[in-house]
Structures are given as structure tokens and as C-alpha cells.
Length: 203
Image 1: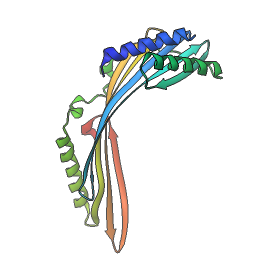
Image 2 (image 1 turned 45 degrees about the vertical axis):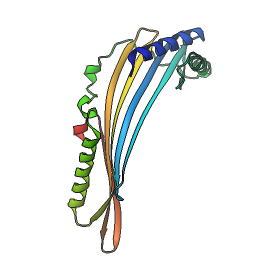
Image 3 (image 1 turned 60 degrees about the horizontal axis):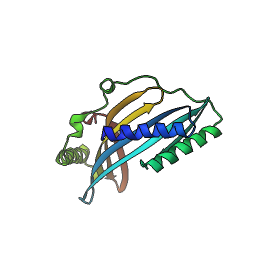
Image 4 (image 1 turned 60 degrees about the vertical axis):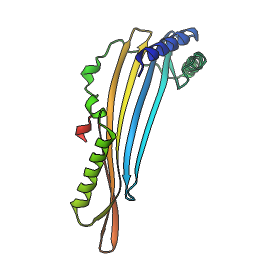
């Protein structure tokens, strides 16, 4: 995440919210990237990579709050974001939660596995092949592994508010999943298992 760019986007979103009539506002952005490597029972390997980013805006009119989100970071896009959030606040029936008024230390969260995110696609292949071998060796009834996949992702979040909040953090997530087919006595069953963790070695 290019922090400077997103900080400017958030500051602009807060300014647009104020101009649209909000007394207080809170803006956040979330940006992330992920990759998935998968093997199937046909011996095929697929690789998928993706990136996404978005901005959310929460505004306050008295004790009412409105929210909107989008992926258009232009001036016109942020203008629409602010206008929709203010319109939503005017329609709100419930009182708003307060804005945060503190700073967060990303190091205290312990949810970023930088080393795990640094693993290569070759490392992913080795991990998947180990899972394949383990599944097939578990019992002679396990005839094939239908699919096994490993997903790695990084997400970064920044928050700014008119109350002075300036916080941000980065987190990692990893997901390992496998589906196997067992056959015995003319009958077959399929089983699935998955695991998700913020650290790769915890899978």
C-alpha cells in the first residue's frame, strides 16, 4: 500500500464529508493482495493472483450516523461517497456509535507474518505436494485427492477521523484446504478439511 496516496484520499474524503454537512466523520481504506496455488486430481495446477482496494466513510449528524463505501478515489467519486453517507445519516433511526479517539500500534497486534508472505510459489508447491502425499498415505481407502489449495494474502487498513484518530495496521492470512475421495466395498465418500491462520506455520 502506498501510504502517502491513501492518506491523501482519506483526508480528502473527510473534507468532502464536512462540506456535505457532516459534523464529524471517519474514513478508512482497505487494500490487499492475494495469491492461490491449487492442485486437482487431474494433475493440473492453477495460480490466481488478485488485488483490491476500497474506501469507506462514516459520517455523523447529531446522534445519527450514515455509511457509504466505494472504489472510485477521484474527487468526483469521493464527492458521491460523502453525499451518500450524509443522506444515509439523515434516514438513520438508531443513534450512532462514537468515533474512535486513540492511536493503535501495529506491532501490538501481532497479526502480520512477513516471513510467511515472503514464501515463493515454489514453497507453496512443496507444501501442497506434502499434503497430497500425507493424504494418500493416510489409508489405503483414500484413492485420490480431488483438490488441495494454499492461499496467502496481505491486507492493510488505514483509519482517519475528524476527532484526530490516525491509525493503521497490516495483517496476513493463510488458508489451506484439501478434498479427498475414499472408496471401499463399492462405496465412495468425499471429505473436506480446511484451516485458516494469520501465520503460515500455524496451518
